[in-house]
Structures are given as C-alpha cells and as structure tokens.
Amino acid sequence: MRRTRYPAYRLAFVGVMAAVIYVITMFRFPLLGSKVHFANAMCLLSGILLGGGYGGVAAGLGSALYDLLAGGYDPLQALITFGSKFVMAWVCAAVAGPQPAKQGSLIRDYAACFLGSVAYIALYMLKSYIYKSFVEPVPAQTLGVVLLGKLIPALLNGAVAVAVTPLLARAMVPALRRAGVLEKQ
Image (cartoon, rainbow, N blue to C red; front, side):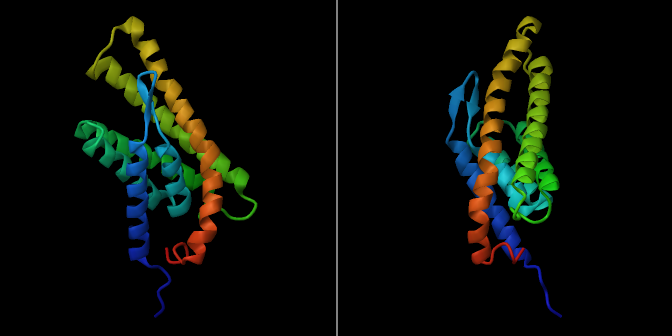
C-alpha cells in the first residue's frame, strides 16, 4: 500500500510557519495606540501554503504564543487571537483553493488575501469594541476615537498583507516544490 501523504512534513511545516509568525510579530512599531507588523502577511501565507485547517493552526498558534510569551496579554486574549488568526488563514485558504499559487491564479490569491484580511479586521474590531465597552471601558464619547485608533493600523496591516502575500507565495512555491515540501503534504 502506497501512502501519498506525509503528516510529519505537514506538522513540521505548521511548526515552521507558527515560528515564523511568532518571530515576525516581534518586529513591530507603534502607530496610533496600536502596532503595525507583518505577521498578518505570514498568517495569510500559511493559509495559502498549508490550507485552511493546518494554515489556520499555524497562524493562530504563532500569534497566540506571541500574545502569551512576549505580548503581555492574558490567556483569554491569546485565545481570541488564536481564533481570529485561524479564521483569517482559513478564509484565505477557502477562497484560494487547494493548490498553492497555481498558474493564472494571482487574482484569486489577491481576492483570498483580501477576504481573509477583511474577516480578521472585522473580528479584531469586534473584540476591540467588546473590550473597550465592557472589559476595560472607556468613556462612551471617546469609544469611536479609540476604535478608529485601532482600525487605522489594522487596515494598514491588512493592506500590506494583501499586497505582499500573493507575490511572496509565488516566490516561495517553486522552491518548496523543488525541495519536495509541498508534494509531501
């Protein structure tokens, strides 16, 4: 009986992508009360390269571990981060389809990254609204300004991720195929 799937390769690739997301998240700079980073691009890339489930786990795990170990967030916020980043990669993978960076699919990959980013931003803003309304309340008259201060960096992170990820996937897929990583998944 011939096996065509190698789960150890896939799990190792999930671990590598989670580690990349963790490290990339460390390189961030403050903007309007939030932080701008390139981790969202890596989360979308994990969705394109690994598919929805595995890519979502890599995106969620790398981001949640950062929140717990380096970000100073509580476990509930890390769990919320895991869920929202999982959804981001899962939506991206669902739209991109099963074959990463197929020929003639650049528009599809941009659409997938855009929709994944929109899903994440919507969940991030919902979390921010709930936290700033009920958990760490701010005065009602300033809630809109606080949320706008979070929306602007989220949109910037999303725009950069959408612009970069499909091109990065195009650059990486041939090398991953030559190395036999994508065929062994």
